[in-house]
Length: 413
Ligand SMILES: Cc1cc2nc3c(=O)[nH]c(=O)nc-3n(C[C@H](O)[C@H](O)[C@H](O)COP(=O)(O)OP(=O)(O)OC[C@H]3O[C@@H](n4cnc5c(N)ncnc54)[C@H](O)[C@@H]3O)c2cc1C
Figure 1: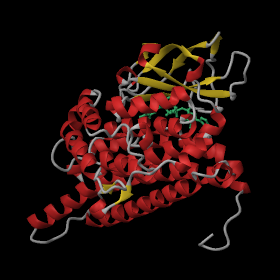
Figure 2: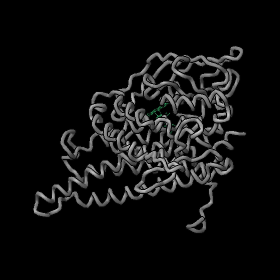
Figure 3: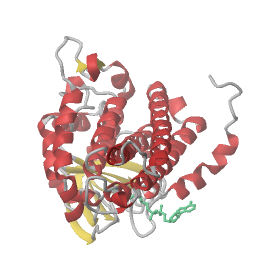
Figure 4: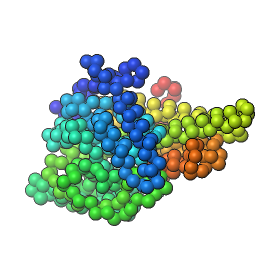
């Protein structure tokens, strides 16, 4: 049985139930919404401190573990909930409204889990890892950015070095979000010392397999709680820890679409939180001015319209990915890859614009770092979105394929 067969035949435990609750086929309620709400409440409580101290959101991640949200995407037969991509992106959105750092950590972890589910489930070592993610709620970090220029995910410098049935890897990882707090790192690497930079594999190392020596600190405008420091990563493990298919396939079939949609779910959550604050600000101002709307009121309408557009973009992106998920040919097509890359660019630009518009609606109250209507943290967090895989890099890469993709003749094609 191939990994794809497993993905297609695995029972999907989650089905939409009443009021957004999620039901298992036997009727037992696994209620993802209630579990997410419980984590969101804790994330919200600690978000300001996580941001100001630039610290790991330990309370929110502990709550996610307690609610067993780290293993939701693991297939039921390996102990998870078999949650869909839409379910997971919805959790990212919900958490993004409260603590963007906790939400982004969750999104990055789930992107790695999605790669393991799709491309590792047919292989004993990775199957056991999936079981452990579900039973022990392991948190996985991601290492793709490397060296000085390092934003090109499809190029690796460090190579896998074989030692019989063992391997080692030494990598100058420019950024590993929550690297110091994770239970494992899933990293790209050159297949061998003789391989080209683009001939890559994906390999999972668990905490006991590696050391991380800090090299670059993480003192940034926003997403401060992701603790995305740089490290010298030195790892050793079994050769079987390398995923059984090459990274070029994993990249197009899972890594790019899952990362782009999960990240965009977080950014949409940040944007929604900013619009909600602007809405409350204008209602509050009108109440204090005998119903007279403040000058920034029209900006709430503008931000709400932009948010609708962003939500539609997310909906269509998710539908497109879920429809294509079983078909490697569609996933690898120029058409799909162009769309999924442009969704990332559009979602990040729109999210930044929405938060800026919400701040203008709130005026000084939004610009302040204190008070009920401050937009500061949302703005600083969302400003990471156009550079998290730089939009200019993506647009340059997509340029030639955008020229090849024909414009559909009808709206329904
Ligand atoms: C919050 C956050 C968390 C992150 N977490 C992780 C993590 O856990 N693991 C990890 O590996 N990485 C992580 N990253 C890094 C991320 O994946 C990207 O590698 C990084 O954001 C790219 O940054 P960059 O723009 O400086 O780099 P680059 O993409 O190298 O770009 C540098 C500059 O060159 C320009 N440029 C590059 N290529 C082109 C091109 N072809 N055409 C035109 N201009 C170009 C860009 O516009 C930019 O100005 C994280 C980033 C952020 C913001």
